Length: 185
Image (cartoon, rainbow, N blue to C red; front, side, top):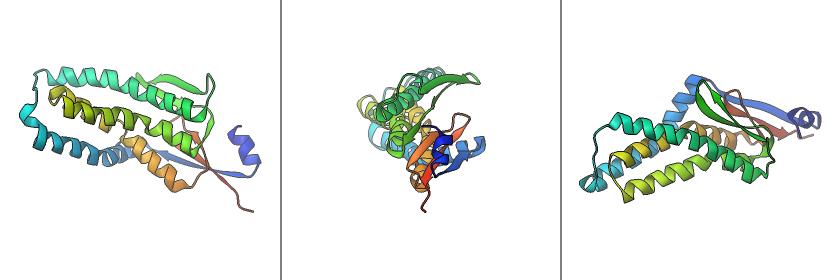
């Protein structure tokens, strides 16, 4: 099933894409409540038992190097499982040196949302748990990164839900998707 075959069958396709600046802005706005929650919990409840380390910049760099590819791999894993996809339907590539993942097939809205939100639930939720179990420099930076990274994913998911699309095609050129709605005749 391709985008062209579905539009020929009476489906209406509508692009929902974000510019680079919109991606950053909406990503920050959508992730900010979770970052503030984690920071507030840490500051009010966990700081007294935190293990604070030097080399914050180096730790942050290590967290980013591990988290970004893992984040993208979770997108692919979620889409592959939820959409029951075949080999080659999910691709991983580098864009400007940054790992990226894209789904090359059309998914149900539910399957698309599962793949889009999986990094938020696994890495973001795992970071909250790590913060509670081992409060300190490493867990705070891990929570910061893993709650900020899926900010744009949260914004895109919100747009998916508002679009009323039954089927979703990922947009591999940038942040966003193509929503497919069956024409009412």
